[in-house]
Image 1: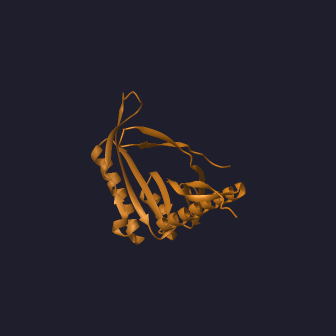
Image 2 (image 1 turned 180 degrees about the vertical axis):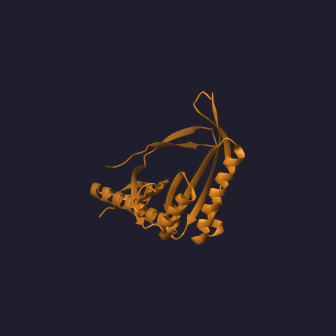
Image 3 (image 1 turned 90 degrees about the vertical axis):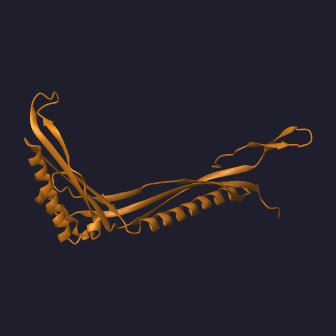
Length: 231
C-alpha cells in the first residue's frame, strides 16, 4: 500500500505588479507507520495500600487509620525501604449513613493511603502479607516498572523508526521508485504495558508472579517519493 499522496499549492507573489500565481505542488509522498515492543523483567514495584475505619466518633476513626498506616510504614522500614520511597496520604473523614437517603447516621468513616516504592521486588510478598496483617483493607494496587524504563523506551522507538523505514524502502523498490528525504514525523506516545500475574492478597495464592513489562513505541514517517535514477 502506497500510503497517502498529498497535493498542495504554493503561492508565488511578484513585487512589481502585486500579482499572485498559484503553483501546484506536485510532490509525491508516502506515509508509513512503524511499531516495536521491548520486554523486560520488572525490578521496581510501586504499591498503594489503603485503610478505612468507621466509628461513631470521628476522632476514634482517625486514630484507627493513623495507627494502621503507622504499622505499615514500620513494616516497610523493616524491609529496608528508604524514607524517600514512602508516601503517606492525608486522612479523609466523612459521615457514613445506613442508606442513600441519609436518614440514619452510622458514624464517621476515616480513610488514608500509603504508597511504598519497593526497589527489591523479591520482598513484595512480604510487604503485601504484612500490610494485610497490619490492617490494610482497601485500595490494593501494584504497579510494576523497570529502573531502565527510559532506555527501554528509546530502544523501542529506534526499532520502530527502523521498521517504518524498512517498510517504505520495500514499497518504493517494488514500485520502481526511490525514497526521498523525510517530510514529516508523527510520534505516537504509546504507554508502557505491564504484563504480569498479580496475586490477590486476599486469597491463598502463595506468590506474586511479576511476568514482564512491555514498552511499546509507534512512529509515523512521511517520505518524499521520487523517480528511480536512470540507469
